[in-house]
Length: 252
Image 1 (tube, rainbow, N blue to C red):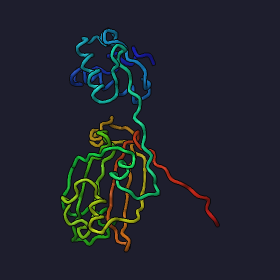
Image 2: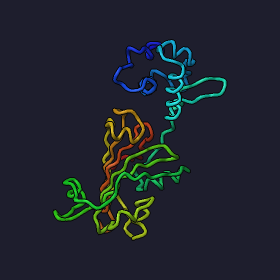
Image 3: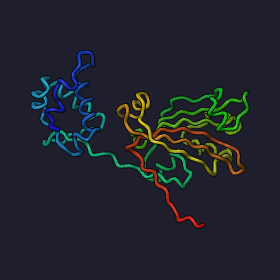
Image 4: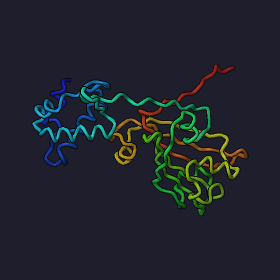
């Protein structure tokens, strides 16, 4: 598809769609995610985009500036604007039980945690079953956005019995690090991985378009004595991770 067809205002401009520069930047974002604009390909000059869209060059410049802020476009002095290359995927082993902080540290990446929620709550039916709780028990919940070198990677929502984590506020960076200090670090886990399309709220948090492919991972972790320590449901960006497992020939 030609860029002129992508930028045809009839395909994206709406009177009730908000500021025109945001509508234009969203159209560019959709074209990139759909593969209509390949990584490394140049964008037309501002004057050409203005002519194709009927917008002012000021509006076009604001739209491109928004794409630069979002990391979708890079600008090279004297050369113009280009679709940014895709960020490299991280490989995550399915055979090692490690924390997000440990995974990123092994790759030389700095981690940042943005807290979405933490506290003590009445457990949901799923949490009661997964953690083996009594009907009158409470759970510690932690909901976090995990970033690597400033890039949103995953939303983690963990639930733990209060005898494992009595104070959710004690977790500052690494949950497993906090549990290890108390002698309660999990030693094994079961994980279930499924493909999903991210809903609007989660996509916004992960800074991707709604409907973008993602991975849902449910993990139930156990202590050495067999007790359930953690039930975590995470959402990962589909463009950020490759999960790798080593398989061996089964012997009958």
